[in-house]
Amino acid sequence: MKPEFITFTGADNWTSTEGMHALSRKYPIEWGILFSPKRQGNDPRYPDGDGLSRIMWSNLRTSAHLCGAYSDAIMNGAEIQRPPVDFGYFRRIQVNHTDPVPARIIDFRNGWGRMRCIAQTRGEEFPQDTSVDWLFDRSGGTGAAPTAWPMHPGGDRLVGYAGGISPENIRGVMSVLDQMPGRYWIDMESGVRTNDRFDLQKCRSVCEAIFGVAI
Image (cartoon, rainbow, N blue to C red; front, side, top):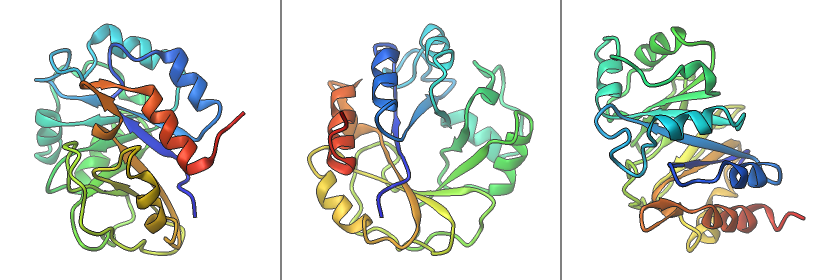
């Protein structure tokens, strides 16, 4: 089975929204936008206010990926201070934490809307909890590839796979994931950057390798 969609994470201040739209018209893509109170506007992967506004008003399919002090506050049941945007604009919310508690993520989500939530897992198997969409990711955005991918849990569940996927190895990765007996997506971050800038040409190469060249 092919992935239902690809999440390309890390669109930044230099990323062309016109280019994002051009790819989205041809392939099933979700654009993951990174958030961190410490890194926002200071790290190339975390767009500043102008970059966020441009992406959010583009009407693209997006997900908010909350990191650092944001995810820590959510796991502690605390309010996050001065969020930079209205997270209700996003289709999904992902909380990047090594010890996620789905109920805490859902409580946070309820303050913004009814979008789906994503939690990360590093285990050999996907958790049985179905209240969130689980993303297998041991790399945490570092580009480190796992030694093996967990089997899909079966049924109609949607799960994700991430970690070290790039245009150079996508065909090998897909030779394994194509055998999964259920719905899934893949997420890529470091593998679609060049000199630490988001690279739409690499995104296109991945899409073509998976879905074929779209006219």
